[in-house]
Length: 254
Figure 1 (cartoon, one colour):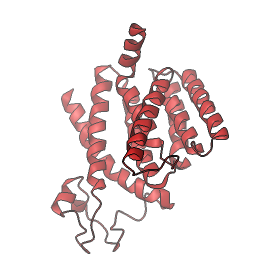
Figure 2 (cartoon, one colour):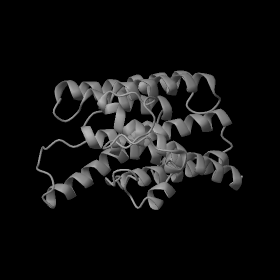
Figure 3 (cartoon, helix red, strand yellow):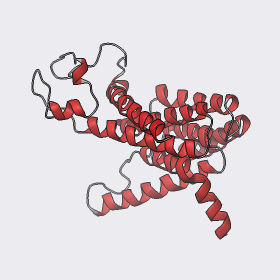
Figure 4 (cartoon, helix red, strand yellow):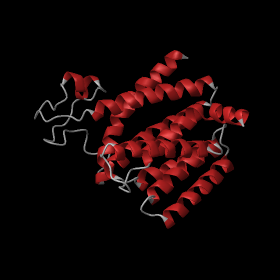
């Protein structure tokens, strides 16, 4: 089993490299397929050995081989983060005897959450080109693949939390965007009930804590816009990894 987990972790490193392309190009309306990977400063087309996750960044000392412009440190961080989360997802899923197709679904879920989080951090937007396919994949996976949530539970969870967030966005558009509504609906489709409420609670709590720290340290002003997507994504990851245990503990405690 550990060999499978490690293999999926290395796959995550490769997917992380692709996610860097998605994070950079999607907000700009560019194709994620053409042209091939290149330096955004000089247009140098990257060769295979310049695309090795993390290692290429270290070999090139964090700069383009052609024009010496700096490569963002975030690129290898995204690759490492994706590898770690893929490894963790595989470990948890295989321990729970998850259906192989649902493991694949969870890996897609994880990759999309990473891309959406960083795009939201950069642009304060959650693009439909990612949130809507995530919603559709979650619902279709629930109908076609054995496991939790079931198909109709996925649909009802997506409609329920999506409707709640849509109402909030309707009356308080300064604090909630429609991108958040679509993302939380997609999370509901993937997580089902009651895990989606755990994800929202954890995400909201983390967002409030981080927001308070940023305001207290003078990095943000009160009522200044903050991206909510990364905190929802964090809450969803917590719910995916430990949701059942946390909910069981809660009901035992109550």
